[in-house]
Length: 627
Image (tube, rainbow, N blue to C red; front, top):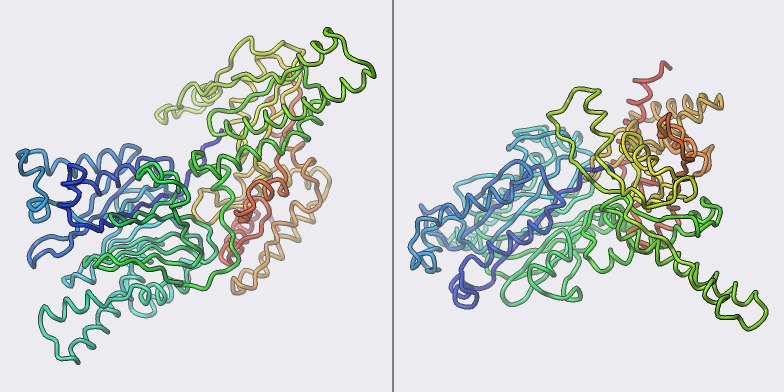
């Protein structure tokens, strides 16, 4: 319903055979490039603000370019960057185009190591200079570094202060640049350490260069550069000499999966994209574990290394509900279960009147949860039919059986996503009027003034689309009651690990809780939470407490939902409105391996998350109140 900006996506490929092998087997030396394109397109949901790719050629001669990068902005960035790459090949003869040896020697992007990135900005920073991969150049091949990631760091200020105190000078105050500087600095030190070691052994000239490249250990680089990182991340990098790595945060907040056979190693943010791109089954694909790195040497040897000690795993539950592709078999099953677990609260909301209720979903993200909800209601109805038959107390007649068995769950496609609101229509009233028509309805899909309408969405975060468009347009069908169902719990707290939810005033749950405190003359709760938050602002982040929880503590989930209805229902709405949310327990039962629920519970996995939500609350209060 409401488009949250997704996390970024990453893709890495390491070819394990010479380019001639792929030319002979698959008819093109571009096998790796083509697979990278597929991996990126299949993850397009993760980035529509920009995309980039980097490539390294192995065994290039001095004076020959060996590291290539292309980046572009906009939702068409993937097409654009691959179009630019292929433009280098358009004037070739057919013989040249199919000559892997010629490509390897003469053509850009004809390499063995590839890395791709899809960008969604969660910081508000935009422009080509913020599109990954970032590049750090050096005359030593092993010191060249391309870096990209799916991440947000919560302690950029601390890291920036420390590395500048050490004399480093990042080009921009942004976490990617700072991390590039950190990893690059440790890479420099590793190369210099090996140089001294090789020189002591009597090596000279290119022998030193080759020895360094053969011995370099990126695990050392990552251990020394990542120990201070607080946040959710999958960070990927390739060096000019052909080493590559991907490292995951110790809490397992952000996801990464990898596959390897004798021809190729592939890593991506989502499992089904690897399944599709390489036609392999899910059991052949491995998950990168918390704090773990996948390391590929220049020679193509892979090893896994524990870079940071794993913490309590807090894999992001929003991944399962909202962001990741529903084509993953586990995610599909989990989303259906989220829908199924809402049957009982929905029955209560419609006063158990299934006969006069139509079930539907907000297109298109909630469709899988909708199927699960329908299955749950089918099971409920079957149990009800059995009870009705048993209650007859005699062998039922044909007519009695027919009457009972004809009970059906009524499902319709009621809401239709009709138009995309264009940003050039900026004038307030015109824009608001158009916003009300982003969705359309299927007229005649329910009996006016008789039927209830139950409509499911995957999450309700800000509530703006509900208020501006959905409730008003659904009310035109004249349902007796509209029950809006969220397959996720109430989103109450900001995210600082890669999703664009960073300020408190954008959450309808937070606004509802604040309004309830005002209504009930409980402003002292707000004041106490503020003063406690303010008092700890100077403490180390490890000692901070999330006092925003005290804003919600006096109220039940149902009270907050009822207040949301007040805030979101347009004045001229005729139908009665109710909002039903998933419970936190239901979320944990449906997604047992993704316990990172800080959006809903306020239980941040890292100290940096607590620090930032504390500051966001202080900022909100100081803008609105005078304490």
